[in-house]
Image (cartoon, rainbow, N blue to C red; front, top):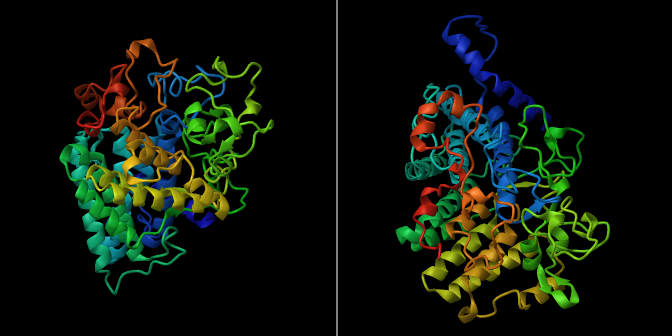
Length: 509
């Protein structure tokens, strides 16, 4: 891991080196201008984990998993006001740390092409597709065609256009991995930290990303069968795509960013560091995790996703209100809530998910539900729940009891879309993809019965729900003002402008 992060520090300086070479100044023939693909890939994979986290950092609050402890104390998460933010690290992580190291002027795709390493081209394009899909799903319009052509003010492409580009990258990546050259540089577990050079698993992940993307638009494109086909193709060979951290390490860059150490490596941005230490589980989360309130019987995953608070209680606070929530018992203190750290996804050594099997099963369940195959939907839904229970290492007896409880639909005739979406919401705890689902459904109570409008969202928003992130103030609003003006992204209420697939969604009622 140390070697990989050292490689990352080299990559950060590549553009400066390349610029000097163009001017024929300070050129050192011994100093490499580009890094071989097998040395670059591990750092790219680490950066993608950081990038996905940087999106989830805010999305986890907008998805009602957690809220600030004191309430009305954070402009972005409590009042939905992004106008005072000084950096948006999620923008930079995608374009610089991931994208430029794959597709930039000295990126892995160029070097792999020069060296004949088409396996690295294939994996690189799949990683770039995943990075672009996740980024456009929080930002909307973004540079795609002109992203890496050297201009400081590239045009912003529509999200619909970016989706076409993402699918092209997936197709191209799959094609490369199906025909890896015998002369290509090897790709083993010391180089590929996700799948150890297993091209079949990379292809399955690409199909999984395709299924995720197609689900976003299936409701208004009427292509749910394509979603099912992609999900089935992926599931045939799928293995969880996880970036794994060491069990123990004293190095901040070898810790999950959701962890209790709150890692803040020197190259990160101010908005990256997690604030779970000052946050509480919401009432929405606790209602979802409660099987029987009168007996304090909970979903067994509650004890896996969180750890007990000091007072061993499991309260939930209203979104944006925290301890200001007047419905909480008199005398409530933060120790009456579950500890958000050291859960399955929130320990320093937790793996960070690119995509997990449960998501594919719930994608399939949702698509089959709208194809009116309720039996098929029920089966995929139950598989998704059971897979998640087993991932979290819930005991066998508890799994059997929970699957037979009133929290789980027991027949196709009783299955609702809320059953599917809420169990997916639990399975994808703290992942940004959940916010995509919530926005596809327009924050609808049909799919998410316990959602409500936060008390401290600013009155000027007029009751509208947040829809996107702002672009990075220190780059886009400075170097690309014409595009910002064209989009209207300088408006105070820009984050309430729905993305393409949300605007066209037929699921909002």
